[in-house]
Length: 386
Image 1 (cartoon, rainbow, N blue to C red):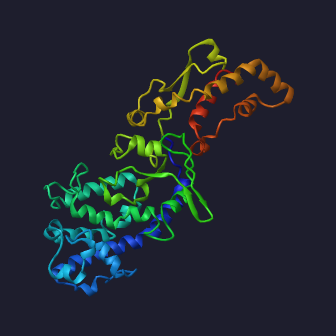
Image 2: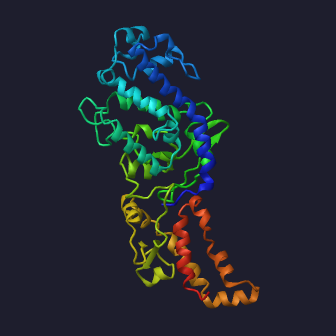
């Protein structure tokens, strides 16, 4: 795990907030208007009240489809409200749902939508805990609490939150035309997966054609936490292997696992290797065992991360890298570097940097196998008298 540095994301986080706050606010307000229309405070012609971007009839139908028991093609706005053609759990809970929506529009509330979109991961958990404690009355059809992450029948409130914090439209650039998944990834410029630090995750847009970008891992899965579906710190640019093949839809608790916007792997943990024969030590073959050297320390979050993302298993396959370093050491032992240093009047440490060309610490985030290569350099540097 390589921590994403602040200089990559703080300005992007501000952009993300600026672009998304209006469509999210409008969506919350629309459903609040629906609750008021059910109770008779508003009529159906006022569903666009207090909404900046006025919704067309087709847009209103797409919003209603999440809370109505009518099929989309059968939706008639007047009839839906006149005959209360709403899903049972929405109709039975609409007053509590209204309170939830009002709470999300209140800038003083912990669950204000701006906090949901822009707060850091630790605060998102506080938001979730608040929801569990204060909206325990909102139940699914199976009478389970809506905000518990292990439920299977999500119910109407879940779908409503999915529609408000609409990841699918954000991903496809339809929530705001100027800001979607490609825009976010392009601005972040995270070019290597922060989970594995192996696979390049370039964002490529060619003549306005979107070619490729990182996958966006929902650290708190949107299948369990729909309210965080487009939260900035819950969208981790990552590779397909880490996101889709390894982490999948699992919920990793931030007090048990590393988070790319909060943590790096323990500074005491390093990639290391043992040569299993003399030829490997000289760089003549790949018979080396690659492992994480914990230097006698223990860090629970780092250990959990290494196990969950199969880091040692995966890096054990990168046996072609170690011989490149071993050959350089064989060809340029300490005695040779001493002579070169005197001949060229260049410090030996500078010659080592030229010889092994390790990435700088700050460049590891954008260098495939960057930490692995830097750790190998530091190990081989130890073989020299510097």
